[in-house]
Image (cartoon, rainbow, N blue to C red):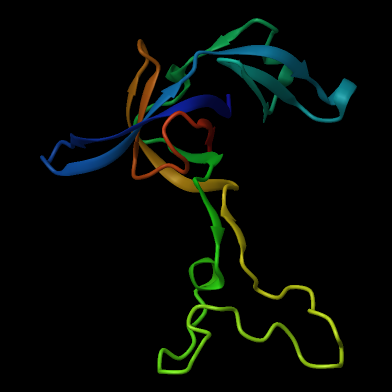
Length: 182
């Protein structure tokens, strides 16, 4: 199995064998139910569709014939020390200006200046007479899918389907997370 759906619960700290504190993210991983099996012969690729709560996602697999509709997949497919890739939806920052969004410089702060945090000139004058594509302008920031690669699993509680990952995971508490083996 190459992946599992889960939910971000929060963050905490645990101690390793040497007594060092490790910041970990707690994930409720599974149980997920297989709702559809896609094979190379019928769909052109091997994948399974999983249900976690009320949300469904598709995960690619090597052999689709190993899975059946209704099969339950739990957190015990992972073990401590595994390196995984975590994909989740980032926290949105709302509508932001260019200084926060693209780290541009501000205007002069002296007397008479009226462009402290404004964009500045958007383009050249009469020619081309328009704003060229790709200009860094204010707009919506964040709220996209982010993947964290090579995140290490610290602990797995197979009975409660809880996984502790070293470090942070994209998104806020309650977000749907896809956990895949690297």
